[in-house]
Image (cartoon, one colour):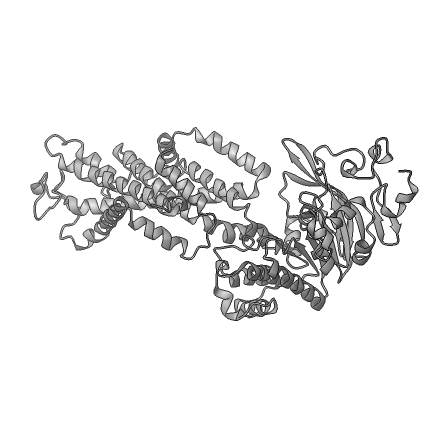
Length: 333
Length: 302
């Protein structure tokens, strides 16, 4: 059994303008010690999925309307807030997108890490401080022990993200959720932070849920990849398989939207973009949600009539489309 | 909106989110000392406090000693503020009265702050149905008139002393503070670091106490000086009606009440405590104003 098993998760936001189906039937599994990447464009529900797992969404307006989140056999959706507080940080750690705002500006970073250690391990102040220094050193902050008494504003973005990572892994969680951990960083620092996350994951044998909109980040760090679109997973496969043999038209479009520096021809032409916009999640189309932007969907086609189910095209390669790349020559075009 | 305010808004927006090098309190102090009115008010406030604390200790006169041969004296070298109808030294008595007036003032203000902070922060932090319920309840309380309610409270408690005065004056005046704190908490809890603190499993009351409330400190300091005048005036009013502190103890309000009978022939008996109240209230207002400007980053350019 996988460490984290999410099945048919539906998280909806009940707003004045209607019910926003931000996450609408997501199932995924993260095996111990492996990295699952979730990719998708803004607003596709990646972050809401992560925050649902942590149970950190404000209720109201958000509510998990159905589905289960099993972590190590326990269903997180049925835990009380008090029990969740014991899970967060101890069993599941989380790294946030913007390191400039994810640390409290009025507390020293030492205080903030010590707080976590004391909370879960019940350490005294002195050993907690020593441990905090070791953690900072482990995430690659120079002169770590001296910097415990510095406030967050004395650190650069990349260094703050390292502090955030130190906080997230302080209590040796078995699962680390990284929500766009490199998006707010300089390009030069992004790779360093990704490498750090990967090293930590390997050394501590953690599982990782890596959420990003960047295909390159996924290619670098993930073992498996789930592609999300409009609140649903549309394709899921091992990373190598997904990049070599993408099946879903959306995945293909995402990959072809990547600029290619090798191809001289492409360098002179414009970047390819996916036409159209994602559907409205208050009133999503009854059938395939990608149909309106799909180059293969046609009028009267089955995919504008009924929603395609997620099916296993090859062992380990799941897809939600009536027009996977490998079946396209079969359909009369 | 005045031109200065608009300029302030624009300057605040242009500055974006600069990395703060000097601390908030250093910045605030620099801006505060530039406001001459506020500095003067602060100085006068301190002088009054010092007088209340020191004068009774060094005075040669017993504040409660009755001496009819010396009644109704005007100001003189031996009695700088004169004497009252019993011949008691007003300089010493007014200082003692000040201790009680200011003491009740600060006591009630802190009580207001205490109730307001707990009520407002829990309401804002927990949110949802609880917040809705607590705020509707507050709406209902909002209509309560402050002084009649204080009188009622004193009547129900039955005895009048320092602590019952504090209760009476704070019981119907914490509503605004609760609202202000709730608003602050609701704004602050949207910060990422609050979510980050929750994500590492910090208990909700620790998130509230360690990550949210310290950031409302500026507002709370302002609130102290905003509430203080109202409470001191309330105390004076109750004492003037004879509902306040019992003789021979005095507060400024009860001293003014003492001077009422002879206010034509010997106006100094009523003027001295009234002047003390007025000065203190004025100072508190100026200080509150100065603090608000000093602690509001939007006024940075002045």
